[in-house]
Image 1: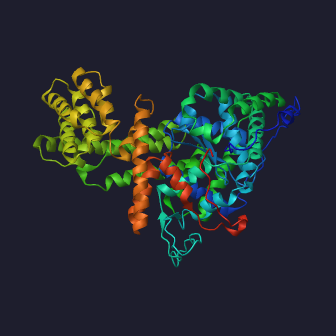
Image 2: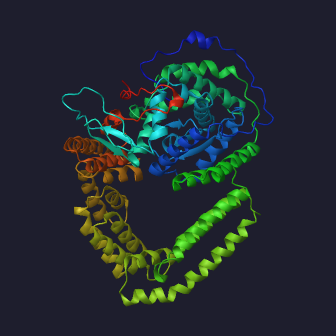
Length: 602
């Protein structure tokens, strides 16, 4: 996955020495994989769950299913039995991929949005599988750092050095001991949550394997692709696509973690004829066995953290979604959502969102098996909820007519009765409420809903006026983009466009810029928003150093988490990662000396 730019490119003579044709032996049935090292698997699981918690999964079921299908078609050809391999699409805009040593493999949204075909995707996933099966994370020169992250990050924490050691001492800062704290007179800060997860991600995405490991993973990716029925030429095609589609992002993503594009295009081209493309085979049986392994680990080890439990459940669903295990998880999650809704006060119960959740699950199951038994349960329970929803309408409409209501009631009304005649009035009232609270994004959203529902009604006209009053003073980038994108009111569009052009260069919170970049990654303002985001992150970094100097770790941690959550690729975030002091490695991994990592690209 990752290679260091200072290392020398591989010898083309060695690559040319590869055999011209080397068929891959067919494997009629892949061995049953287990979990040979539960401790390492658990550490990797913890890191993977934190990554998903921070960045989220990409909500594109068809693309996610494609990653699962190709991933398991390749995985069954490995003969790897130490860990179950799982695949996820993480919601990161940077085109990349990564693998944890316990078998958890991620492809980013940005990689798929490049338009990679199945052959390219197979080579990307195969490369990451190669890192797992060849145990590169354990063998890597800097293995201590990665294993420290996995072994200590979520339980003990990461110390970000205050660089305030005693004037009379040149000794490095002592490790954090949860029993005694810090014991050498210097002040460190415990970085939690988003900052911790970001360090895991950066360790995987922004740090380096050796060049030999990268070459080995490249070869494995092409070989597995051919064995699974995909063209190993996909590796070369990927690099060519990257050169055309993402030349402006060389400091991030695949360019940074996989440098030497020209060398790798040549190497991939030389190797692509070295394997015969086998007939593609279903991975259904392999996926069922993988599901059994994950379900067994979940049952026997019972992780304490909720996000780890949910990550494993997601893995059970993804590996083989047509099973009793999968159905039980689906139903349990729906019941949890239903019970939470029913526990609310009657008029604030959001039946609409729960009914939509049932419909989404039903559609997914139907696409797999139109005659699945659980569909009848979904239909019956959804019908009961819909009946309750309809029973609620007369009373809810009466409350709207009375004109006295709270925000949760308005939110639930719009979800429960999206086609009701009261929608313009309710949306307008909700827009007014959010405007008073300073929630500009939701104010704009609801004013727009009122305007679209009935543009010439009194409510629609008041909503239009509310938007025009908001536009000149709006600070929320995403809200301004919504108004600038609408076509129905040229005057409002002009006001919003002018305001947006000014605010992208002067907004004052990281959250504002991060939300905009997440929601509008193709906007022409992305460069300006990113530049301002980096400035704000740098300002916060200065505050981190200041508060560490004052001995105020709480304020320092707050700012560290803001940087890592909202600007994880900023220069400020890179400096924070470089300053991270990690507790000693687990003796199992050998080398206990942990050096501060060099900056990416150095």
